[in-house]
Image (tube, rainbow, N blue to C red; front, side):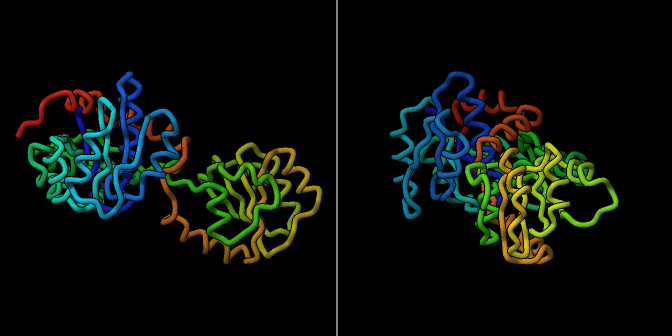
Length: 318
């Protein structure tokens, strides 16, 4: 029963997203996969992303020992196990890999030290994935970081660019973060918002401005029906955050209802609300089927998952 432990160099490196992508890829080959998390709160995120496609289950609680986690893994009724390890605790991850005869996949970002923790896994290391690469760091990754890792005999499975869909909050999370109320189409609160635009006086024609980005959340004063109606004329707006505690006019409520656009009402000003949204990033999780779809696409384009799958079929070199 091959086991792959997905480890990360730092919080937010993308461990859950990569674990879900690998589990989804292997299960697509008609092999039974169990995906779960050891010493992690990320199991609920895996469940939300993978749904019923993979028979995932939690292993143990935060205080479980390596031996207890290893026993839980051995009891999984699957052909391949994908297990999230401890972020940054490479000694414990290595102990678990040795206990379960597993391979380790290390996920890191360009801002992290990847070389030293990767080297610590020795022959247990299946490879590394460089995740969340900013647009203007791709050259640095390809010209310096990957050659550096390759020269150290570390297999680079690939790299994935930073992607707005993977960093997108749901409308429900936006409302919760702002302490706001969803006053219209609350049943659509699971939609993702990739971009926020401010509904102010702009020089461009309103629908052109609001249609300039995909999956938009508009932050606009609640007493500006002219701007709100301009936003509702586009196909890209997914929600409107109405500020200053002003309830929109009934015509706006009606149009939003017809188009299924959630309206979120908050008491703060537009400036205060925009500033508050800057603190939202730390709360965003990999917990949405649309995010699984996006990481699946990126993994297919950027990662050698077939080689990783093949490595899991071979005995681990000690």
